[in-house]
Amino acid sequence: MDALFAIAGRDFVISVSDTSNARSIVRMKKNYDKTYKLSSHTLMSACGESGDIANFSEYIQGNVRLYSVRNSQDLSPSETANFIRNELASSLRSRNPYNVNMLVAGVDRNTGESSLYRIDYLAAMSKVPFAAHGYCAHFVYSVMDHEYKEDITLEQGFAIVKKCLTVLKERFIVDFPGFTIKVISSSGIREYSTNDI
Image (tube, rainbow, N blue to C red; front, side, top):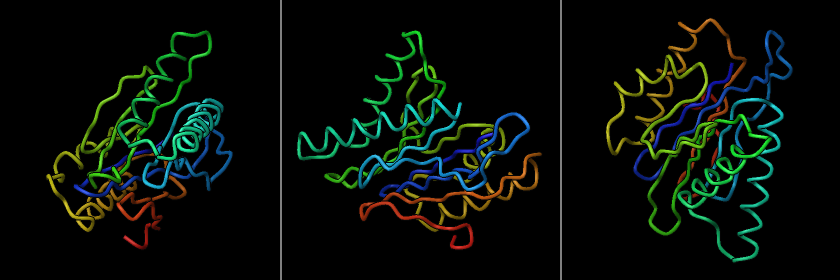
């Protein structure tokens, strides 16, 4: 019952994820952050099996930081997404594949351009202007497709997020306890509450 979605503007990405950690009919935690800071300007959101998310995300986080330390520079969002896709593809061909779906969002520190990558558990990756994973995708894709325009401002992005959250609240049978909203921009990663937008 995961909900992840994100919207990319020219120089920012808004990432939204629910805060529930559930399995079957049991909610184990209601303040779970499904995002992982990979660098000062790159964020990964993950959903899927809880154990796989923890193992794979910590592995990726550690290796991206190791690269930064060894080379004295961070990977760009594009390089990070390709590294993640390659690691997921390698695990898919092993005896222990990870059941993890991800959104990788970031802003390139050199060009200032934002990028959003959608990666599924089969290691299919695509660069997209907006994306969603989980059951929420059935509801929010239509809103984002209708409302999204190129070069949207942060305020317009927040307006789309509000509409998506309203649709989820009105139409989806699951009532999420809350959402984590993070904005990745040239100044770094900043967290917002649903009341702030």
